[in-house]
Each structure stands twice: as C-alpha cells, then as structure tokens.
Amino acid sequence: MQKSPIAYMYVFLAFALFLFPCSAIAAKLAGTVYDSQGESLVGALVKVDDGKYAALTGPDGSFSFELTDGVHGISAEFMGCEKYDKRVNLSSDRHIKITLKE
Image 1 (cartoon, one colour):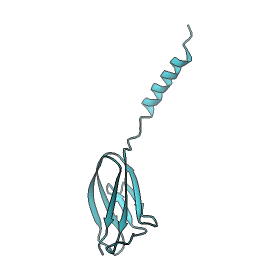
Image 2: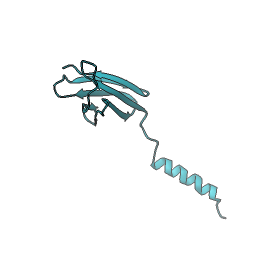
Image 3: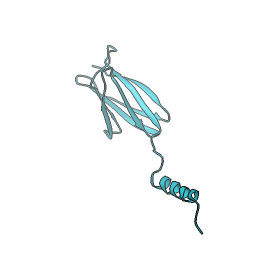
Image 4: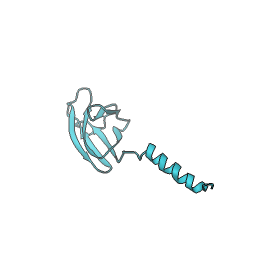
C-alpha cells in the first residue's frame, strides 16, 4: 500500500520543526546615545551582556539589537565621557535614550 503525498509532507514538516526550532529572538532593543548637551554621538560603542553583542552608533547616534526576553546589561562608551551601565528588563520592543556625561 502506497502512502499519500500528504502523509510525507506532515512527516517532513514535523522533522523540520524538530531540527530548526523557532528563533528565540523576541524583542528589539533600540536607542540613541547623546552627549550632555543633547547632541547625538556618532561612533559611540554600545555593548550588551558584557560585549556578547556590540555596535557603534550610526550618524544619528542610533543603535539596535535583537535580543531574547529577560534582563540584559547594557553599556555605552565614548572617548572623553563617563561609561554608562544599566540593566534593562526586555519583554517587548523598547527604545531607550542614553546620555553620556563628559
């Protein structure tokens, strides 16, 4: 007795879902880095989870990361400014403003 093509499709889909589970990325953490005068900082270093993820801010001082839900440590640095460190609880998309003091 020959199996129908639909039966093979279900087996393939179940196998594919087992091998390639859904991505764990749940939320986007984005923000902008400013100096103490409120000007955006180009090229500031922003790190998440002690450097596990890192990015330099763009021309408008912006950055973004796609992360899993939970608490993440975020830091920002720029030459001549004090380092910024904060813990962020992420459960959905979030935008933050970081001001670095000179």
